[in-house]
Image (tube, rainbow, N blue to C red):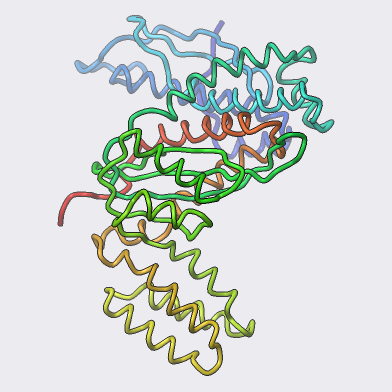
Length: 387
């Protein structure tokens, strides 16, 4: 059998989506993944198809069919082969952990009888109608071992530490609760990003943040020069206890959002936002403090509560000025984790309500493991070489 691996043009892909709707997606995925695997083989061999070169590392040997179960159903891929037999494309395996975790989450909801009709229908397509608790348990155990090994791996030196939290709905003791997902990421001395840890807790209380941060330390986290985060409940005290003496950069983006709560009139919000940006965009700390004093005087008679808030909180967003100027843009906010949180949300919104905390941790860990691998094998995030 001959397998076609030529990638369809983007215009043609859009036409297929327009004509076939979501039913066309499996075929589009097949085309794109097949092309990605083909390019991986060319990189492995060191030559393009039919190219002659003394740098050649081997020879192509056709394609082998492989059926993969996904959220969209079964997809038949054409896996490129090489004559030497020492090649397997990463493109095919990439993302399978998160796919499996999502399937398990849906399956658990189905087995425990807490799913909606929509979720039950999805589960039936993914897992078949005869899903038993023992089948789910066995599948979950195998995946959990991989994810737990990743969550407990040694860490080492991290220069910039980012902390954040988001919430997911989880069923606990028969009640639907908002569970706090505690997240940690960082930039190492080589300038690359890494996901460091994740935890599912029932709140952002100091006790939970403290346990989470202590775990990072026990896994060898060291060398932290700056902690970047919002002012989450419980995080401040936990951070001060675990990272005593380490500077803290309060997220400027969240600071600007928080300021709007203290603006007495709606028509003033635009001016206040502009003034705060002026402070944050100052060329250095000294000038930022000059701007802050000017802004305080400007609103002293019209927004006393805002003035008090500015004086108490804005300085917590100015720590960035003490660090390498070329890093300011990426260490002044926790936006790196905000984007990660958005990717988590994109995956978890399919589940909506997790049947238990373990299911929630499983899916989010799989997504984060996938993201971290992309980061660690991708481009440099910050140039850490001295000026």
